[in-house]
Length: 241
Image (tube, rainbow, N blue to C red; front, side):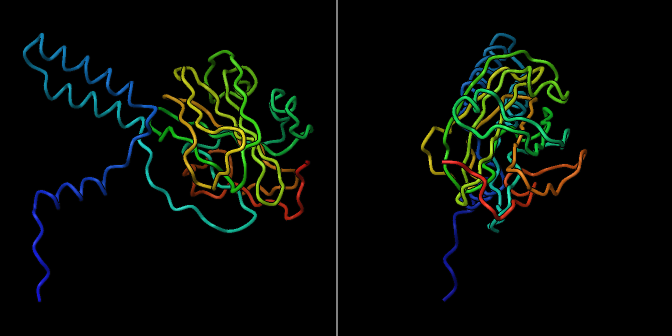
């Protein structure tokens, strides 16, 4: 028996859904405001429908959250963001996390710079649990500068993976970015690759790794959030209770 024929309109809708990435809910207010403004301008001028559609579509693209295939190998940390690796080196965790009990001392850090063209959602780098989430107000210097990690407004998340290792992911606002959205909460059980936050427009994300981690990327390399393996983690647990 031949397969029943599908409605061509429904088939086209399914193809669009499969091709277009979903949007992060945090972008809804901005997209709605831009769409309303563009349509109001079109109503006043009596023209500009195409411009309104293109403007709304361009803004919506900033909040896309595409599906990703995350490697399920043990003892790795995947990229928490799309972008370009801007800084690699040892650094202390944010003091607001250390005050909550995060282990002090230098540890490997990989910083990823997100331009206005990159996907702006952030991803969980390892399977584990959220132990703390801390926001600290700050300045808004260009996120590709090394001092942005210390000076800019940021939200830091303390993760402990299933092997007991402590990591920190830090969302850092940039020169244009003024809004950080973090959906992670202390006590949440999380999986590598899950979307947990959003920074509106250009920004930076730091991943602080456990001591002994072997970084597998280089400065200038492009990363794909939830897919690029940033580091291999030492098999010995370094977390503290």
